Amino acid sequence: MVALLLYSYCRGIFSSRKIMQACEERLTCRVIAGDDIPNWRTISDFRKLHIKEMQQLFVQVLQLCQVLVYNVFILFWQSVLLHLISRELRVLY
Image 1: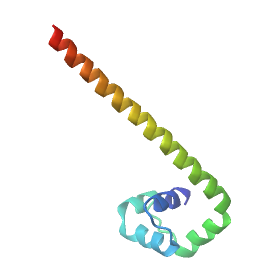
Image 2: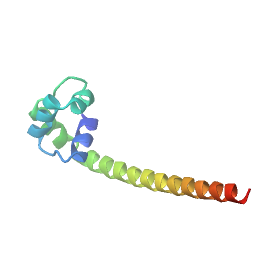
Image 3: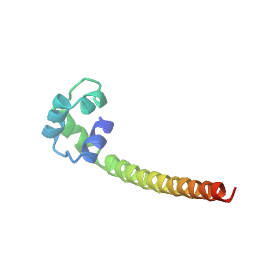
């Protein structure tokens, strides 16, 4: 249920009824839910029961994404620099 809620939030789906509808219509949500479509009331009750933990987890996920994006950015520029250096070396020899 946690993965389904996090994925739904990232996709801009916040309503319990819309999340249930997404599980019925979208393959990605159905796979996350394990082909066991939860009732909107179950989603709502789970969210109410675990709201504090979900808030903390969502912040941690966003922080992790920020770190990953930074690392990908660094790797991209390193590969660009290596490409430019290798091109310059080919010109010299």
